[in-house]
Length: 244
Image (cartoon, rainbow, N blue to C red):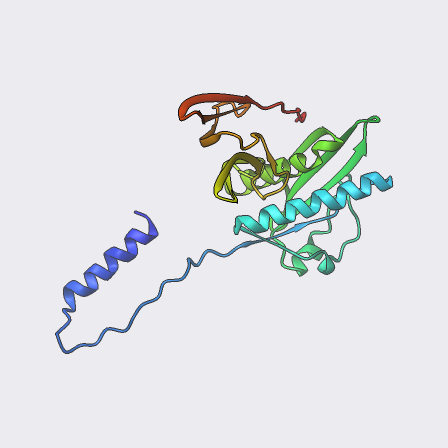
């Protein structure tokens, strides 16, 4: 029985044994949100050497912080509160210093350059209470996919802490509608779940509706009207791979 159903059941029992007379006045009950406490998590800056790696570290950590904050399951701790200065995955954290800022989970990572086009990121998820490693992961990625890599890291953190699959590295497809003089222009648009990388995949010349992803997520199917005749069209997405 869910907590919501339990609450309804308890209220029903109260009404059963405490009938309300016509003269009683009810006070309004306002239910705003659940009482689920967020998990304090510290995402440390990833160790990096070159300026390019340091920029990647800041950008990736920023995305991870934003992802986990949006989930409302985690409460990312400001880096201004961090006490331990060490970064990277080659040392054991000073768990007491992270406990002092009330962190339950610590994320440490480091970025390295593999060649002129590829980078590698290594990440460790630490449990501060038990002082043990929860999971470690690694991704190899081209520079242009740093944002998707950050979302994938967020997905892994979310999954290994909550047991549920993350949705941060997903895309949204929808119909964008604008008004041009006396005509409505509809285009199929695609973007990351957080609104980044927004682009249009149709030009607005034809009326379009109901875009959906194919099961393997590499195609978008939608209905396009030309001369009032509907046609199901398929748009093939060219997706670059991130090695895990």
